[in-house]
Length: 434
Ligand SMILES: Cc1ncc(COP(=O)(O)O)c(C=O)c1O
Image (tube, rainbow, N blue to C red; front, side, top):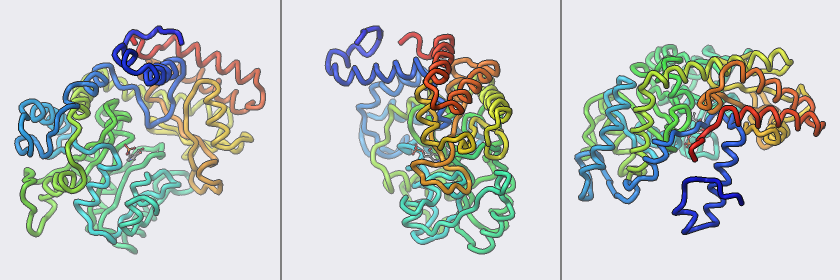
């Protein structure tokens, strides 16, 4: 293989086999375009933080309350990440230790519920996440999951949300999704949660960057607990974060008769020692760096452009006769049913892969097809926007994608779309210094 990469020299010397795969993935990311909406390109600074010497350190516990010595700098870096998140969201308490988004959600269940309690979440097929109650996930196995979904137009059906609250009296309601293209009305969820006296958890894994960037409303002050990943629109390391309000955490003492004011302590104790051992301080360093980047003016501009780009893509797809769930988008993603164009979601994913674009097959609301070969695809704009692409490039991309999907049996047309995509990737490079 051509050795054009300027970094990873130590890996190359120690393990040429691993080096081949790492640089192969770098090539793939540079020459193609990631349009999976849950993905982004972390900055070099974030990647450096994740490869730093905090990897070597055990730090069970929390800043100032550790079970191992030598914590001068782990305490500082973790506190830095916590303080930055607190400032950005205006919350009393932040835990940056969850290993990822799913463990963050698991910690909330563990902190606030008992096995068998009822949880109302968004139906998976309508956009919810597996940790919101899928039968074979911990959430569906140990808790009684009931669901709300979207209406015929593809928007959250609040009359169904309320009737489910009335009928099932859940202990917790979750607002958040993995494939919902519209803005969340956290105020209405909050009002309903208070009316039916249920905990309200907002899972903002997909939209955290849009919220920080001011493109979407924040659930802070409305939800009892907020969870998120840090590697999607936050553009940070692969990890999770939990935010809430209440009294300062006292993780060494279990609160007697806990109230909502004790949620910070309950969350911390659920993470450690409830579910996890040593926090990944190198990842937490990456979260700190990502939060610093997210607090700048450039990030705000980026977040707004992400939404503009998704809308520009959607406009072309609609004009070309594609069936978009909810008829468009308010955020970073588009969910579309492709079966009207003579292919299924799996086939669409494959043909788009051929033209250098990664998307993912996805069920659409009411899908009759099996999960491995559903009717739709989900695609998003965070990565294209990091590369600097704007509405004009979105229009070119949407035409190239439409051409390829509509003519997926024509190698000539597919090839032409591929040339367009590869050229755009050269014109808008990512990690050019690597
Ligand atoms: C809404 C939502 N919550 C939680 C998660 C879980 O994140 P992770 O994959 O990091 O466990 C995801 C991931 O896609 C998600 O979309």
